[in-house]
Amino acid sequence: MDFKPDELRWQAIVNEIKRRIEAGEYRPGMPVPGEPRLAVELGVSKGTARRALNALIADGTLYTVLGKGTFVSHPSDDDFNEASTRHDQD
Image (cartoon, rainbow, N blue to C red; front, top):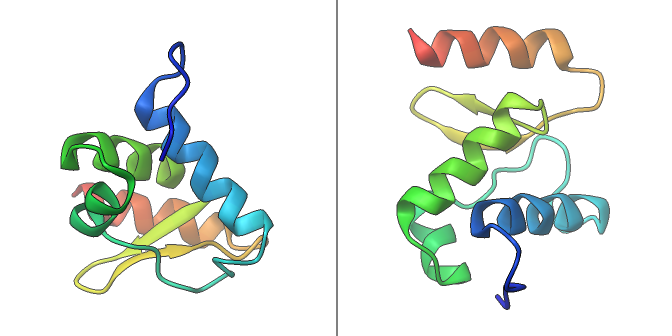
């Protein structure tokens, strides 16, 4: 992935994942690559990939299922996403 000089890498990843969702590459309920795979695919550290995924979880774009992975949210799943995110932080 090419990064703009003034762009934070984790924010560029957030934008790329949102672009993929909008383009239909990632659909609601579909798993997204985990931190290790995303890091290799985009040429960043696992920490940078983690920060991007956490930002997408925090804004409701993605949600996690303990032991299963990270998935694209359904547009009407806001209540579920908040509960899932709180559960994972416990």
